[in-house]
Image (cartoon, rainbow, N blue to C red; front, side, top):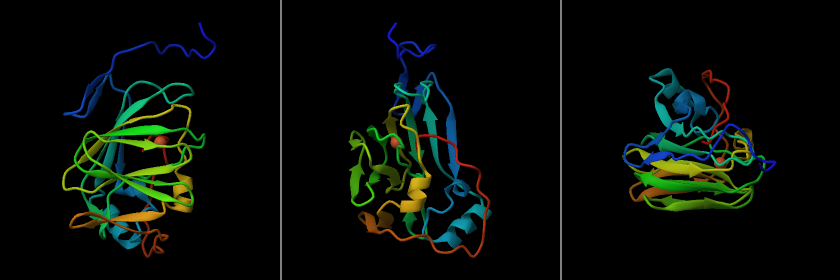
Length: 209
Ligand SMILES: [Fe+2]
């Protein structure tokens, strides 16, 4: 047995249903509501109003049982609902890998975008079903729904890379994505407005979003 073997994970087949957006056997599923996205949208008042309203689900992440540990290669399907907050398209929290390692996203359904930021440069990839978006090491990444239907993608990522959400809160993502008649309007990043209202948000949980 090689020294990196990590019991009890064994070779396994995972049924991937790109139509129903499921992985089987399934691991944990994460649900991100508007209240989980504090400090991300520019219009803080609009964000707080949504939280105090029906606190909508913005996206879900369902995973396979492969654990997020070093040398493993977990997979997950993220589904982002269509919507916007004062024109800013609904999106994932975005994260940087503390251990800089690459990752791939495969678009499955709907229309979306992959926003990446290395601290200086910003890149945007249009994501349509069949597109593989490659995230090089050292690039923070966020997904955005640019369409009128749910946008879903498969992620395959190094299990030991980790997820640093605070990096995005501190540095932003270089751009903000707004809805436009022809897809997306990318505007230069600016920090969120000071809140005139507050809403509690639960503690962040490590996950691939
Ligand atoms: Fe990642």
